[in-house]
Image (cartoon, rainbow, N blue to C red; front, side):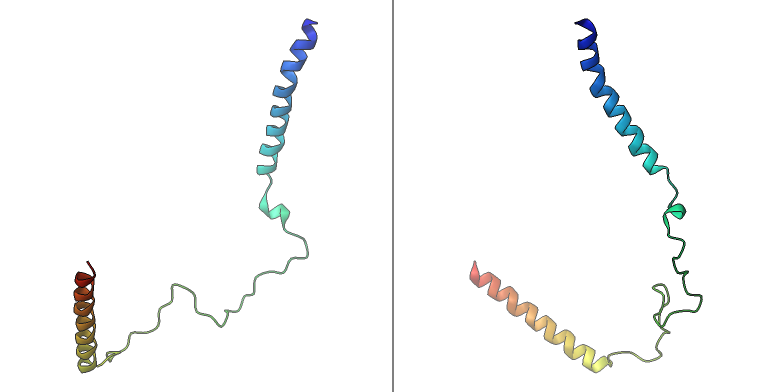
Length: 91
């Protein structure tokens, strides 16, 4: 009877160790071994899209002329003031 109780205690521990060994063994496989033999290589010529780190050349002229920029800033300031008044009235 004593041997049966020992076996019942050791069996789950042994199973857990076996599962852990399989899990750790799967992590040690090389990724290069997992690629199929008929996989296509990456193209050598550059694609039509720019790489992320490449930026467009600097522009010599401003995107928005200064007079239009001042008009837009004034409109935004007026909208901000209207919203502040509306929020104060809502309280």
